[in-house]
Image 1 (cartoon, each protein chain N blue to C red):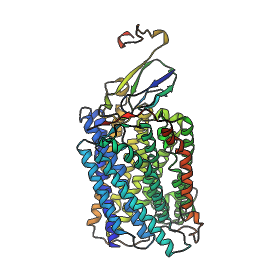
Image 2: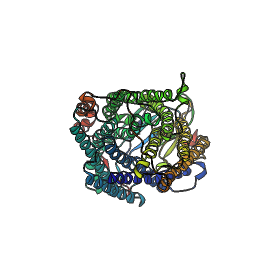
Image 3: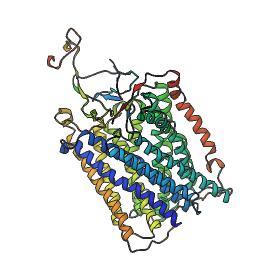
Image 4: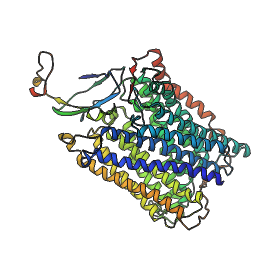
Length: 83
Length: 538
C-alpha cells in the first residue's frame, strides 16, 4: 500500500516498528512510502525527529488487521473500541 | 616556543573541560531515559541537556582540539615558529566568547534545538551567532595552517611537506569547503529567521545546505586521529611507517570524497529525487577507500614494528607489540571500534537498509562508536603523547593511562552494542523518555539499563582522563625529549606537486560538488517549494 504524509508546522519523521516504513516529514513536501504489511498486530508509529519539547509524547499505535476485519463507519473511520 | 605551548594548552583545556561536562550530561540523559530514571527530569531539561551535550562534544571538544593540535603540528613537524601568533590568540578568544554566548542561551532554555538545529524551529539568534564565531575562529586557524605550510615550502623548495603537516593542511582546506553549507544556512536563513527579519523559511533548502556540512564535518573531527595513525603510531610502536605516499593519498581522498556525499543523511527526505540520492550514495562508497588504505598501511607498519621486536610467524608480531604504551594500545582499541562502526556505516549507506535504521538508536550507536570511540580515544592518546612535551613533565606511571583507555573502550562497547540492537527493534531517537508500560517498549528495558552501565563506565573513564592530566601537572619527573614523528620505510625525497599541495584537488572538489549538489540546490531556486512558517522556541 502507499502511505503519504505531510506536516503543517515543523519537521517530523516517523517509522513503523518491524516494517520498512521510515520517512522524514518536511514542511512544504509530501512524503510517500510504499510498503506491504505481512503480519497483523499492533505496531508502534513514533515521531522520530525532534519537533519541539513535546516530541517524546508524539507516538501512536498502528493496528494491522486482515482486510475482512476492517469495518470503518460511515465517515470511513475506525475507533479502537471496534476492533 | 613557550608561547606556542601556552597556545596549545589553552585550546586543549577548553576542549577537555567541555568534554567532561558533556560526558556528565550524557550519563544523566541515559539515566532518565532508562526504566530506572523514568520519573526524573522534564522534557525541557532533557532537550536542554542534549543540546549542551551535542554542542560541547561535536563543536567545542573537536574544534578546540583540532586547532590546538594543528598549532602543535605546525611548530613541531615544520620545526619553525608559528606565523601570526597574535591572530591565533585572537581566534582563540573569539571562539571562547562564541562558546560562552551559545552556552548562555542553552542554559537559559532559549536554544533547545539540539546541535543539528531543526528549522523552522529557531532558537535565540545569539545561540547561532556564538557558533558562527567559533567557525570564523576556525577559519583563521585554516588560513594560519596554509600560511605556515607555504612559508615552509618557500624555505625548503622541492622538498616534501612533512606528512603530519600535509594531513593538517588537508583538513584545513577540507574544513573551509565544509563550512560553506552551514554558514549559508545560518547567515541567510536561520539567523534572519531567529531575529524575526523573515517569517518563513524553505526547510528543504536549509536541510540540503546542512547536509553539505554534515558528513564532511565528521572527517574534520576524524583526521587528527588519522594523522596520529600515520605519523605517531609507527614510532610509538618502535617501527617505521610502511608508506608515506599512502598517507598523502589518504588525506587527499578525504578532501575529495568527504564533501559530495552529505545527502546520504537525507535518504529518507522527500525534497530530493532518487537520482541525486543515488549519485551521492555512489560517492559515499568511495569515502571508505581512504579508511581501508589506512587500516592496511598502519597494520603493515605495526607488523614491521612487531617483527623488529622479535615477533615471529603469521600473528606472533601482534603479541610482540608494546601494548603497554598508550598510543599503541589506543590504536588497537580504535581499530576494533572502527571495524564495528565502519560495518554499521556501510549499512547506513545503503538506501534500502537505511529505511530500517534511519533515526533509530542504531544511528546514535554508529556515530558514538566511530566518533566517541575511535576518534576520541585517539584524542586521548594524542593528548597523553604531547602533554609531557607541552609541560616538560613525565608521567610517574603509565598504568592509570592504560586503565583509562581500556575503560573507554569497554564502556563504549557496552553502551553501543545494545543501542545497535534497540535500533533494529525500532527504538527511535531524540526522546526524553519512553513509556515502559507499553508491551513492546517494556521489552527494551533491560537493554537500555545495560547501555546505561556502559555510559557510567565512560563517565568514570572521562573523569580518570582529566585526573591523569592533572596528575601530570603535579608530577616531579622531568620529561625526556623523544622523537615524536615516525620515519617512513622509504622516506620521500621528492614527491609530485599533486602530492605536495592541494591546488589540483580543489578543482576536483569543485567539479564533484557541482555534480553532487548543483541540481539539488538549484531546484529550490527553479521551483520554490511552499515555505514553512518560522517557529521561535523562546
